[in-house]
Length: 328
Image 1: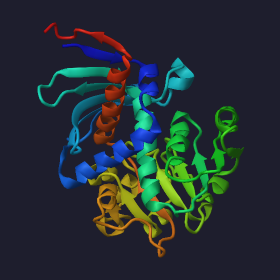
Image 2 (image 1 turned 90 degrees about the vertical axis):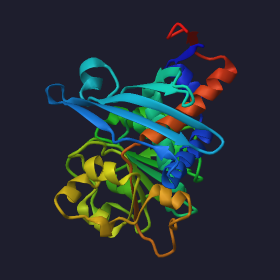
Image 3 (image 1 turned 30 degrees about the horizontal axis):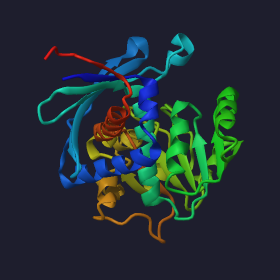
């Protein structure tokens, strides 16, 4: 048997949003039904390097397919300036659950960006106004690109407002998408008054206040993925219809982790996990909803679902490098 080695280009070529969004939606459904196993994300904290490692294993049975894998991923905010490397890098080991053979070793960096965008799209489809046409993005780093690519799969986005402290990041974003969308630079408040806004910053002090959002804006809070990170003012979280990806992860390291630890938020403030809405156990957006918030920490089931899509297409198309890892 052979293992496929799939680099960044291979993962990118075999992970279209049109297929990733449904696969990630299926992963949320499997998790909600109890057809998935996802041990808690474990952390190795490295404050001396201003970074950390996380290990993320999962298995899921989506009905027509099942899959297993583990991602080894980091977050080192100094990487772009100090080492010319991405803040987040990862390696995914994708295995056959029937016999544990490692089917593929693939770049997890692009995989992470794409599945994160896909998760935001699933939440947006459930929680944004049906006729949403404008998207705000706060933080124009690499994660911002897949937010637009994915969310435009579920809503007819025509206008994009992007906000970032670094002008060069905004310029790169506009250069990338300017031919496809009406893209312009704007303030955080201008981005927040779009129909949908995705926040993708690593801040530990909130940068978005309640008056920075429209009356019916849907917020994808994507930046907080470790304890202490916090993008949205507590007033937003208290007033919004608040949907999380996973209770254990969000209370520990999601957008809600800081006010949760301080006792500002509790179980009564949580409307649902996203999987509950996906399977129809709870309603998505209703006419009565104002601001909605999706707190995304990033789940291993999303990585496995995305890796499944990548591996199946790579095998069909003959992409990647096949090699005998185990000598069997």
